[in-house]
Image (cartoon, rainbow, N blue to C red; front, side, top):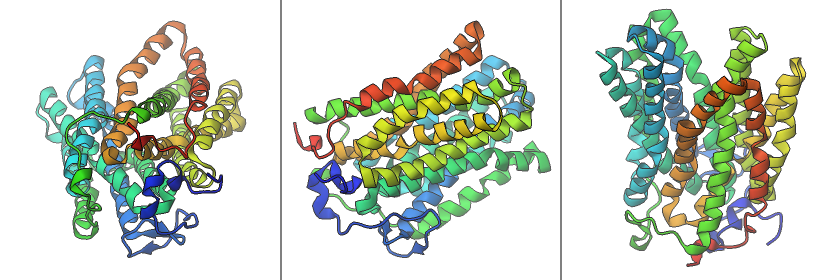
Length: 428
């Protein structure tokens, strides 16, 4: 297959008859079009724009628990162990639970997963002041987290579907909107609580109410599927797809170790070991989050033009020198290296998901959940506590050197990804 074919057509040729035309890349500030398709002629369609708006809103609430931890600890007199349990419950509910919700969305194929979940996440996570104790606080956090989890499989699958030939770019725009929401969340919740008080946090659900109403009124239903395409609650995956899927999952886990490791410990490292003020450390973390947003957007576009495997391989090997440089230098060189390393590493965020969906298109929701929430959640539950445990014993900077070297293992795995002209999803 020619190198200049679009990423959307590379992996599963059986889907080529559904693609009507190749299109040019759309800029992030493209015009909104009323047609229900995805990215065409430099225009972001209404459907893709609505899905991106929903993703921005849901992930705005994804940052609520970590942002509000100091206030929750003070208000409910939480111990450090209880604070850790609270974070663990939210990670379990918002990330790991994406897997069963992915199975449900494959079975039901309903737009209600996308329409109602911003409201669910916003309502429960903005109602934390109503908790009367630690148990009720855990319940509200779990219910809000499940709202976050239920949104992602169906909406990501629909974003890929409406993007047609430019599937890589469409999913990249969708992912970037979520990361933007996650980055805006701390400022949003801090503004409400500092200006009005923690008791007024319930006002934070306002965007969720508005966006769910817009989605209910305007978001089209997912494309209809033939009865033979609707899968039940089974775990069967075509034999030829199992190896590539395992490689993609491993690559997502390795990337998440770096992304979550830096996201969790970056401010602590800069504040305690480099002498940054809290404001300077927070700014640097924001810079890293922005690199993720830019990386996801650029990665999908590059994958459409160059092919997904090339982007994954280049990302894994290309990010390490910049992340090393971040730890080895000071000042603006260090900050720019962090941004560059994060951008290159996170090019693969939409790419792994789209390539994996193409392997088993009949289970796109389940595959999305595995590659997004389940992988992310398992890293958060297992690897992040391990990083903290090791840092107590050998020093945080030493552990971070190991963390940022992890993509070299991913490079070796990425080289084993099959050529994208193959169609493993059809084999058994």
